[in-house]
Amino acid sequence: MDGQRIFLLRLYSDHPSGSKRIRGSWLLYATILLSCFGFSLVGYDNGLMGGFINGRPFNRVFNYPHPSLLGTVVAIYEVGGCVGAVGISFIGDRIGRRQSIALGAIVMIIGAILQASAYQLAQMFLGRIISGVGIGIINSTVPILQAEVSPKATRGLYVAMYCSTLNLGIVTAYWLDFGLSYVDSEIAWRFPTAFQIVYLLAIIWLTVMVPESPRWLTAHDMHDDAVSVLAALTNREVDDPDVVQQYEEIVETVIMESAEGSGSWSDFYKSDGLQSCRRLWTAIAVQVFQQLGGINAIIYYATTLFQQSIGFSPKMAGLMSGFLQTWMFIASFIPWFLIDRFGRKPLILGGIFVEGAVMAVQTALIYQIQHRTEIEHSAAIGAAVMLFLFEGAFTVGMQSTGWVYPSEILPLRLRAKGSAISTAANWISNFIVVEITPPAIKNIGYRTYIIFAIFNVCFLPIVWFWFKETKGLSLEDVDLLFADEQALEMYRVMVDRELSDQEEQNKDDEVEYFEQASSSSRAVF
Image (cartoon, rainbow, N blue to C red; front, side, top):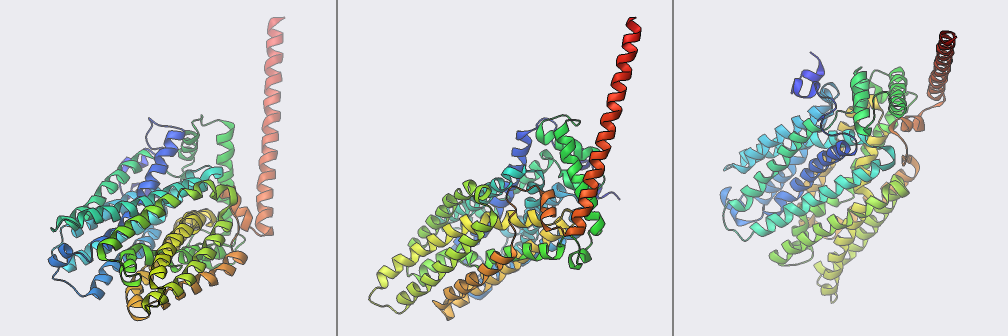
């Protein structure tokens, strides 16, 4: 059966260009909106349970479970995300980007319903896993679709935009939880849990409106559809020279990559001319670095950190957590103006450096608080400031680049599989951080922060020597950035052949023109 007809059948396969009512910039904006909803949902779910899991309404329903069990309920979502990211890698290339995202949204709706209606912890546990599977599918596919339809000059900007909406999702969850914390009934956690369905319905609707990736269509021999999508995205005719040129570049890349392998899993481990193995490990590294730097220890457990590490009251801790995530949302606008100007690598290096420095300072400050020294009060203020500095450094340096970079550097024939694996690495790293943070804070206290500081310091030389800059390059040019001499020679041959064919076509056009002119002249006389 045709991969385009596996899932939602003709609804997607008959409309590769999305809605025929919108073209050009509006079609691109619809794709950006889809990405924004997808990542806002990631943020919302990241911030969701941290605000009510310690509350009386939630614990009353589930008979006050042990804190370690609650920690597992929170963290198991990350395991589901890993499973979803890996699972979609086996069918994502067959059903396409849009259907993959829609599938993830449907799975998440099922998970949200199970969670919001739970009266047993086992049902909540199951709902968290299913929701995790859905978000893993969405999270690994949305960056690919966005990268494959965005203009190269502003690709980083659009990723920065949907990372801002990720932070908006976190802010929404934190403030919604905080507002409902004054309500002593089950609605305090059931309503926020069910509210994510609003995001999911919007995502499903947008997958019908937006176009399929022209690069995916070309790779699956749907050439007419690919040209139609390129024309729709640029609001030009299918025979426009710019559309034809962009399409031919995609075809050349598909041919060059096909010569290096069929796109199977084994291609990642071959020593091919496009360094596919290195590119996979680079994509994995940037996702792992993003998590092991310590960001989700702060996002998930901000309230816990403000209470247990810094010593704030429960209400003040909740209030400060809301302010912290609001600051992260505001700071996320800064990369909009930096990522396509300064590039990916400088932002990653700068972000990691500041994160490591902040965690080192935080270690000393928390030590003063936990040992109740004479500067305890000042140290508490400083520790709170450090959390704000850390989230600012993360959102400017690592957040946007951590999502745009993997989708850019992976080769087309392996992009879905590679993105799935790198996203799975993100989720499993996230799980480790979320699982170990509460017992670490309880058992080793201030030393928890030095662990994250050491991680960040270790990441710096890897990024400096291993990562390549992709700013301003088309996805096809990124292949050439990693290509060896043999692959480059193949590309030159294809270009020379294309130029030769174009010259022959021009000559034929000139002969036809003069023959028609000669015939017209004879007709006159």
